[in-house]
Length: 630
Image 1: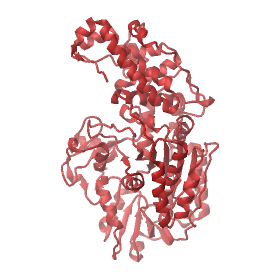
Image 2: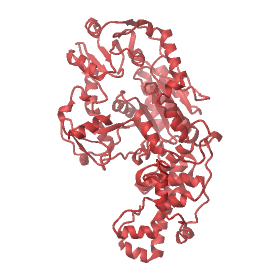
Image 3: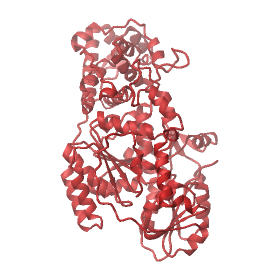
Image 4: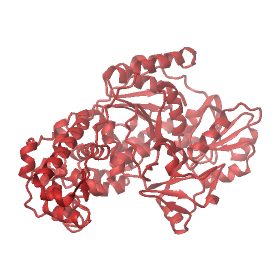
């Protein structure tokens, strides 16, 4: 990759600009290389020509006289304003490229702000241009600028325009960052399936595993499967079989925030020969998020996945092109729903219809959670043999009565973290699992829980981590009860502290689920859906003026969390960490408000980009994780 600075290829910028022909040759080579790389990535979702066009035009501003004067004075470029202006003059399709080109400086921008030419908006960038900039003839003669392809609108079977911009932007970012096209080698699905068949021979769920392999060999793109608790081998078998049949590039396994993705990565890695997991936007090399989902087996969380799909930040968007041509497994997506479910459904439809991806919805709760996707028509589902319905009893006692009466291991599920820690501190033989523990520490606790013991173990967690004969729900919450239902052993007991028994009959549960997923207003209570409609990501024909508000959508649709590095057991030197995947073991995501409090108290050392390193170790307990202050 050629980066233009005061020296380039051993020549000073002054000499390069004096020698206009030499400079044009070097810039032409850079543009053609970028075009080839960007087009190659975009070809994964059938838009190679559009990617090529974006790559070939993105740096044309570097031929402007204003750029020469800026560089000679030691300044930076003019935020790609000339390139964006050239793109914008090419019609509506050119404006889509203009968003991508302008975004190379500060990420995807709103079209405009309170005033039409507000700073950090596309209009503001375009205003930096002279307004009459043309593609330089010295370069156009060498490149032979192709005709801009037409983007098919969403209602005619093509992209929603805003998501299309994000995908092309991801391709251009990868081209700029890597400077070369990274080949995508398909996984050895045959070897994976061989290991899966070996597991099936000795597993009590062997029938389901074999059925999953058979059912996955299909051409449908949206599928579902019910799985017993913590039996990821079943959706993995389904995904591997489907990936082999359809020649897909990777498996991306998406779990809830409380599902301990490091454990999921280890389980999946036993089959795939290794799986990377990413839950935080932080890099070992630059202090900012840099991974791009280029591996063959990736594990991530719902929040991390969808934040990347809706964020306007460069580092978040970079991975999107690698979602194309992948098998994406969403485990228990019902846990992450209210207010954002419809936009999530829109993303899934985009990936399936326009990005050559396949989606598998894996659900461990026994109730009818497929109502999560009422807007997807048609939904092709492959049904596998379901586990036998569990027979459990319900109890409505207080926490201490329930745990003292229990004779076996007890799982305590909670929503209120403070209340859970209070009960944990008073309990004996107890372990705690929380998303506010760094994964390296949490994994050790998980191993201790798995170790056979004659003494009673009480485990506090937000999510069921296995099958227990006794489960206590500290909070009277339907989602928590359904989590208990999925983790309760046959003939076990579920105790709801302070619950009303009538709320948890089978009929009441069914009515509650039906109401939740048929009530569009309830799903959209945060008013996000209307904003997505304005941004072109909807089931209706988008605004063809392409005045998208990417940053506004990003603020509304993404979680306000910040990565925090925990130096537990030893001081962590970020530079000494071998990879981004290794660094993930020491990172938790905390609310933005909590992080701002740490900054005010000087309890964190900020790093380049987002997030920081915790310096006040009194705020982290080895047994319960980071202590959120109210």
